[in-house]
Length: 404
Ligand SMILES: [Zn+2]
Image (tube, rainbow, N blue to C red):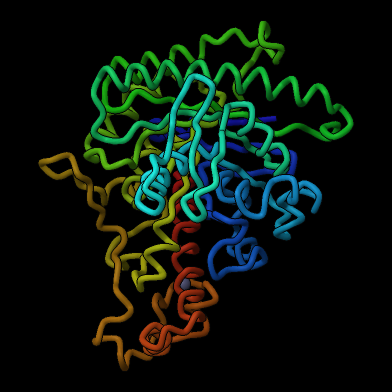
């Protein structure tokens, strides 16, 4: 079941996605549990902040410890002790991005792309693997994921028009194979899915070209689902991929303007791999419902802290939108938050919390001076406190985006 409705502000929407593991309120941000763990934070703490869904990486979990092992453990939820929902990516993005590293480490070309799938070399030990659309679905089903992504080809930036065109057509053919295989596997196991099946999302590609983005969307939505053995309503959601690959930010907003008007209103939309708070706000205003990004945790581990700027009112989506400015190059900036680096000398004797108005575990119990000391001495507890705070900031951001 799914309810997503226009909120009455810009193109933003508010709703709920009911997965086989529970309800997820939209719009939402997903903490990233790359290898089945959100770095430095326990699933209980993630739940306590308020998150209802986390993202697991198919590529990493397939290679180590293996999806069969996780299946035998009772699925990823049980394995990592997380009873909320889980979204898994297709593994494609890592195959292509880590392929380059295999070349560096083993002197052999990292990825070979064919119609069948992507053959690649594990960047850590040089073993060979083949990821096909069907294999990606099987791995994600073994993991017990609630939201599964189709395997796509995510071209790098810059990408020529011809390459982007070829790539989006391959992505459509792979999406068809994913859809067919997914529904075949689900219908083969009625007992396993009697309480509900996972959801399947396709991925729009087309790089930075308007006609190709529109063509990709059209092709995916025109797939004849019943002929492929699936329900007539087709995709459970649509992801916009091929962004956050180094393209100018101005292009990101154009891509959203091209694609979102073509998408069915009653299906969730997921913008992959983004982003900074101002990008999340702008994308919600353009009609996006789901986000994932390593920023709060990765930057947190480097001492970068996000906090609300108390000079501005930030209670609702309209308050947030008012504080976003566009630069001449199309880059956006926002006044509603600021970042500080906790390792800075000026916090040496600052005995106040990161944000006096924040009710997270780090702000309720610790001072900037203490957290700075933990960073200076490389104590893991410091990474944990800042990750908790930054994820709380992102959670609060998504809550404000639900308020008109
Ligand atoms: Zn806090």
